[in-house]
View 1 (cartoon, rainbow, N blue to C red):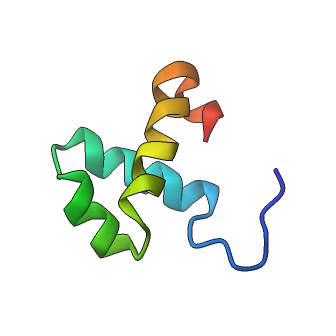
View 2: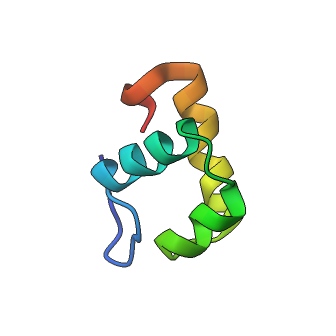
Length: 56
């Protein structure tokens, strides 16, 4: 996987994001806590739903 040098979320960070979503945290709160935009949270939720962890 290609990660650009300023990427806020590594694959492990994306996995943590998904785990927190699955526990019921609100996307807006999660985005703030992880230092990303709420759109980024939704961006990673979709491939997880379609492909599982391999989509991250």
